[in-house]
Image (cartoon, rainbow, N blue to C red):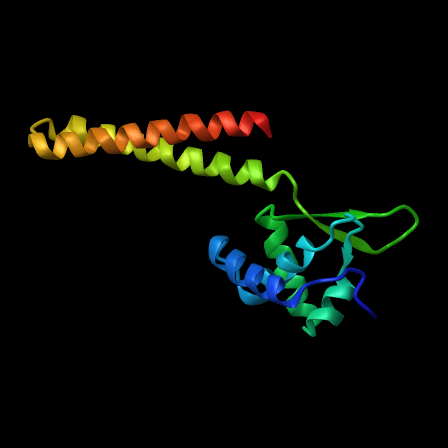
Length: 151
């Protein structure tokens, strides 16, 4: 089987490294995700193509695809009158990713407030640093939420 998409090897390797780190993916899952980035036509990539192009075992590809599907990084579809599943980058993942980031920042703000309420006797220097950090978190939450609304 041949590649159904054209890739640039350097960009592919950079994407494998970047997304492997950002999403904490094992190497093969990162390669699958990076490969799907080159599917500009959104035609979808089949399981068999991943096995052939990445020279990986079926079980390894299957495990990696399951991990990517569970993480909502990719989605799959069946085309009419075909048994094959086609895999695509999840376009909604950008929104999901940043919603998770906002939630983590909000959780951290709540934790900081709870700690502040617990200890009540704070040093002035520490209180100023904490307030500056909370302001930074709040500012970023607002900025990200405004950007998400534009997506």
